[in-house]
Image 1 (tube, rainbow, N blue to C red):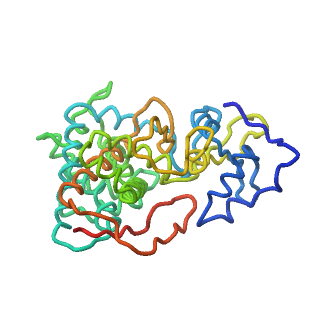
Image 2 (spheres, one colour):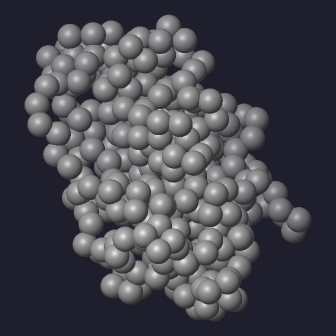
Image 3 (cartoon, helix red, strand yellow):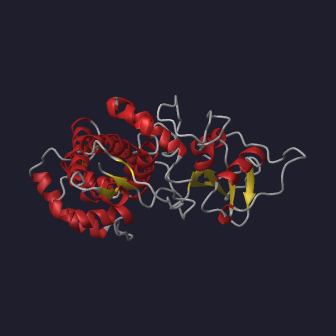
Length: 367
């Protein structure tokens, strides 16, 4: 990582306000940081701030800057890599089919309505429904699985006892009579010394449920808001669904579900001392005019949007894969089941959280 200079021109404005003081509209602060303070220590926030695209991208890939527990977008742990390896062939096909099936079921439930809130009635539930179907979990346990997706399975020094107790009889049945679901794939997968133990399978399932959690739902809500705000672009996506992946990447660039990702320096990096916290401002980097033309505008067909919302690296993170499948098949299901879908008029409340930003509600008219 090349550390940007902290010194600026004599005309540099006074020190910017702390990130802690900015909630509803952080973009003026982001512009000031990118232009005049590309690397600055924010004492009230307790972190060095990085705001330019190239600097943030480099920091996320720098081995001297490691993930902070609970700091968002951690580097892929071994559990995530194991899930990544498991999501091949039949398992990936099962996951894709589960996303598509769940999306159409949820969308068709709205078809007879005049209006709906897509956040509460579609975005919040589709990742959970996908996880239940892909893993082959009992449908009647969807509400409990949804809670785990949103808050994480119960944890202790022994791992996830509540999730483990729930999965134990299911794993025993899958080991004896495997099927085509993802839980069967995990239960029959083999490591160097034999089948994966129950504790490892439980950890892998927990990783997948985490991928089906709040961040995916919020990113999906922002994506739907962006395409609904641009009806002409939406019409193109309706007739050319193969362009949806690019539209999704553009939404992650412009409106990432996490605006701030924390890293900790394990050794000095330029003026950043060892042990210091570094805040990678994804919300600022994604709108860097030095990297993107007309950076504040949503353009579903932008060339190479280069989103940072799922970090960088050579691994396909489970949450990135699930989020992309959710966006692509979720939008397709809505446009198929609800051909007259459009955003309802009215006020749009500003997000109340800087770190996690997405629409709290997304009222739409069905016809």
